[in-house]
Length: 54
Image 1 (cartoon, rainbow, N blue to C red):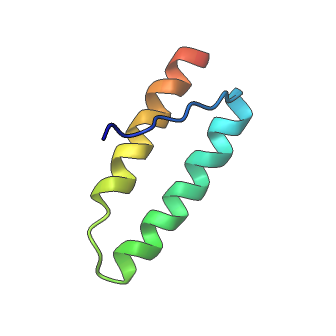
Image 2: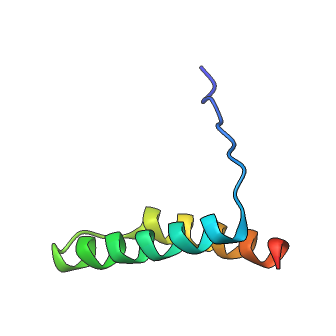
């Protein structure tokens, strides 16, 4: 069964807010000793999106 994809529209302001929230969440995960590999992937996707919006 194929995974369902979800798409959202974001403004530059939304991207900045999501980026800072993900960075805070990533720091909390690292502090707990958990590997943040999936969070890093989301952050990279946001950074690419921010370049497109700039």
